[in-house]
Image (tube, rainbow, N blue to C red; front, top):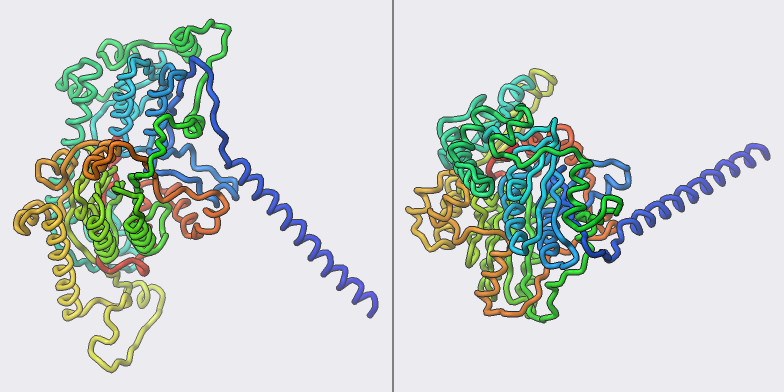
Length: 587
């Protein structure tokens, strides 16, 4: 008995000590991560070069997922568009930085973000500093950006992708049928194609029409900008795309004017040294984007008057289901604080969203209208501000979008899965119900909707659409009839949206800030970016585990993960959805 107690106590003590050791190790490890994530001010030397890596993934605003840090997992380079644009502006203003080197590679980036980066580089060139681009394999998106360079260099065995644009949709109808799921669809809008992956196996005629229209609009802008920079006609660029330049010999890029010269990496290094008046034996001083983020901003103002730039990007909903998500409750609370803050004289809403919950879009719309009563509100659209993203944008005093932004998509839909074949025929599950009223069990995912339920759903969808249209008409000071002519769920580029009066001006975030300052009659002001980025510890506490799951899903399936994510969270999603289906990548 004594031995039993002795061993039992020893075991308990061992477990306790081991637990304490693991706890201490965990605290030390977390402290190490916190320390390593703490940034210090960058100090630079004369003749520095900012190296902008055009590879990995570019998102609207980036903060490291704490689960990835703790688990030691990496997704490849991910950069925030806000950090890139700020870094380019700092490089322009800092006299010690002599130029920018574009190190191009595999880049995952939507057209409007590519255009914003290219425009920022065009502005940088006004400083008379150099831009040099180099790659062993330019993707089409990277080439679009790099074409602004003073010298565009390709490796002697390298390639330039130039083949035109395409948009691909994955259709899940037959897959769902194999597992016994039927999607019951309710919608308003001939072009509202977000439901098609669940109901069709090919694009509808209307969807194919609108997709071709916005692809041609984006391609036209890309060709015109590249043509101007490279002094090649748009017709010639289109002919080269017809040939598909991706696998041509490197010498072809010189003869066609797509590139200036061929060099190996060591030759590029020597060339950059010559541009900064360094000897071959000298070390080239370079700055990464992380260095630029920590470089003091010469434009920082001490003025009390503030223009708040509020970033709202991702799916619109009430829960943090995704890595990038517009949580309606948080956005409403934050906008209310900005409304009540007397130092904030104007607000720029940076919206990059394909939409989401119609209900939550309406709640955010309401808070923006209240904010607008107190101070000017300007919307800056990113890659997407469509459907629910346009819903909330329409309340602003002024809307700015990139020419390649995808917007509009004014339409509503609802999806209700019928899993009867799955549950009864495949799993052997059977359901019975007792109810006091005819519709007490409406709406069930375990059986098809009744005719009465279908009618009620469609009426609700119709009412949601009419409200959406009215919000847009009021915000844009147009008639309901005129809005309906360009609604029906149709997607437009920013260039076309301006012609249709869906937006007011073409440009990026700085265009929107300048307009906000004008509307608020401000000459000197401070720009505050919100919400403030969290430190690692706060981010760890506030990040739902589901975000890690979504990250893993995206890592495995890429842009095709969106359809699966909708299925994954369909029970939690609002029954009325205002969203568009497109993720356009020009590579």
